[in-house]
Image 1 (cartoon, helix red, strand yellow):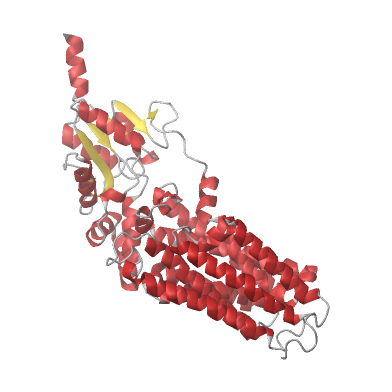
Image 2 (image 1 turned 135 degrees about the vertical axis):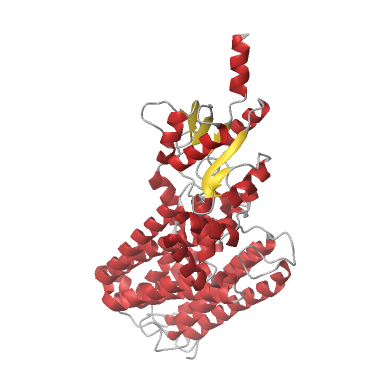
Length: 489
């Protein structure tokens, strides 16, 4: 009889579940802060003032301004299983979080739990000892309870709990049971968030060295490569900021929900600190390579990219134009790094070609949209804009090929080529590649970023090889390869 009473008492022992970092991998409060700050400069200033006035107050105001969507949060299955087990045993399950009570109630309602929660309210930040006091006040000082947490702030709560579980940090005495396996190492997570596969875009920094023939000079080539590496570090720092601003949109995306910030593997503070370190190292390297002018254009790139991440990506047409400018700035930076003036034709060709790729990126996203009349998440387009975007993108690619053909007929721009007429042949593989990738996108065979697709596509690699061979033939081939009168300049 005594054992039955003990078991019955254990079954009624309430289970308190921490939310941020435990039930979900996300930090709800910090994500709310970010959403408020990206609403505009005035809101960003207000958010800073709210935080200075008190973290609990900031949480309250952010929860009212930008409530979370509980359906999109990255929940931990192990914790959900523990909750389900407790519910089947008839035990009360109560969410206990330092986030604002409005958001925690939304999560409790979504999971079918009691809406009587323990959370921050008013000027009370319910964390650590404050949370423990709230738990004891709700069930009595002598009542037993179980607790699931994840951080050092939970140590005092675990010491008072009958049974404790953790999904991350735990006391050294081993008194708390681990629910999950240890996560991947921070460097591995950070490298994934930095998107090193995107660094291939920074090969554009080497274009001026290639078109001018200075890539044959080891010193110039080394400077160009170093500038490309600095650009890669700066670009990765911006990717972290971009992912931080796009958490909600990425969680609703078919593949982007796996990104470290959206999935909750990388925290917002860690992302901010890493971004600051990366951009500082990149700018220091730029100053060492090219002094003030190079740092200035790196700053232009950073400013334009941040503006794109925060606001411009949701403006139709402007978003594609901004992306095209960001690609072209890479070429401009390459010219400044090695001290080579860039041809007007090269810059114009770049703008049109990358405008086409920017439209292609939007086209791919729009094809995946479920509704033709609803704005894409975080974008300014609707599904019905599909045909206009495709027409604009294909037209831009044709304009780029036309500019390339006109470039060949400018003697001042091609004077350093041994056989400049050979450059006309570049139009053929480029025409093939642009038309092919647009056709594949229309068939739904291109996913995500078209540049990332091209890096994995064998035919794209073959086209690049052919264009490289034509370029080398134009640079080093015999003069008047086509004959002195074949093409009149």
